[in-house]
Figure 1 (cartoon, helix red, strand yellow):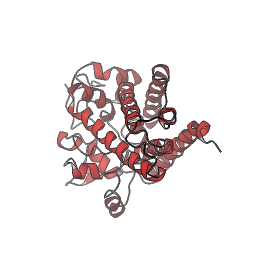
Figure 2 (cartoon, helix red, strand yellow; figure 1 turned 180 degrees about the vertical axis):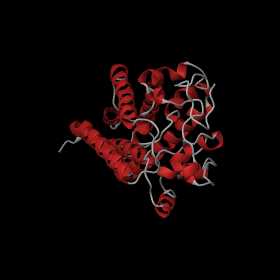
Figure 3 (cartoon, helix red, strand yellow; figure 1 turned 90 degrees about the horizontal axis):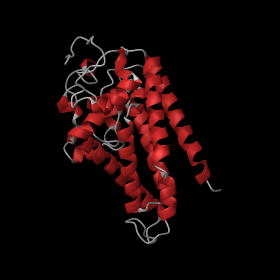
Length: 281
């Protein structure tokens, strides 16, 4: 059976099941009590994702899978080698895609302008599965173009492109969970993959912590490249978000879309009322 026409249905089914599964986990075993209204945050983060999808559909007329199918019979591509089994080429592609995600994410922290865009994601004063939707359309567009570039250079098997996207979406929901995973399980899992504990450190308010743990799915890039961060104090004491941003309006759609163009430090807080422990600019 030709499964390619069903790719969209497969993707969105996995996306929704992963999101709702993590949401249920958060409800049953929450890591901490959220300070802002969950319904409003979810709605605005969902609208932000919808804006990004609409803009991509308008300006980017090719999907990763269609590009992979189009070039698989061409004469270029680092993985376009019939001597290698499809399974081997696919596994290599998934690992390389994850390395691309790592370096792209790291670049968003290195570049002052890209950091302004990426701050939209880090500025959530709470932390739950919906934080995984909180990316500015500019960031999603850049990530999509980089991913398409990786496909064009490697010419991986189409199934590997789908598997990489599905893995990324599932891990993205899981690592943003406001949920408790037994410490022993989390510690064992993060030897291979990024876990909620590891990624929450990346959302700490401390620069020495949020400029680290860049991995998307696999944790070994941070360990190999010296960007792995751990948390020495009790995890419950960790404050997430950006010190400059607080209040209900920090998740308003208008704020999220306009924030990168205001200043390098989110110079205007979302609300004039700043929570204890944060700094008003």
